[in-house]
Figure 1 (tube, one colour):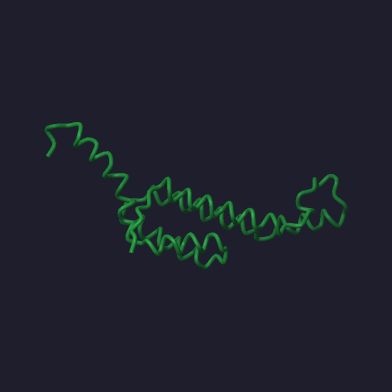
Figure 2: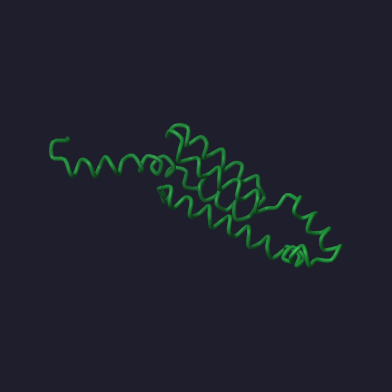
Amino acid sequence: MEVITFDEFHMMKMVNEAVDNVRKAEQKEAPQSMLRNENKATAKQKKRILTLKGSHLMTKEANCLKLAMQEVWTFPHVFADIYLLELMDWATRSELQPIMELAKTVKRHEDGLTNGLLEGINVPCTSLQTTSSWLP
């Protein structure tokens, strides 16, 4: 099995792409009245706009996952692995296809999680070792 190392940049790139795909799909399904200026809308359109504003939009849920995902990189390594796996469980239950595909990708390459979270620590240490002749 191929092992992928997850670093913050590439992981957030995948998350942002998934959120963008959810937004695009939702935009296609949104009625034209959502795109109208409320001041120019008819009474029926205004009512529909207000109903949609209060509804549970898919993009809102996807964005919440994105914000939670950004926090993974602030946790100590031991907790970050656990937090990330919990987020992927949440993503799987979200019923948002692009988000579910992201979760499947992360779970499929779970071995790379530890490597990616440690990579941020190892790279500065390696560069320090190569520049300092007195380090072992």
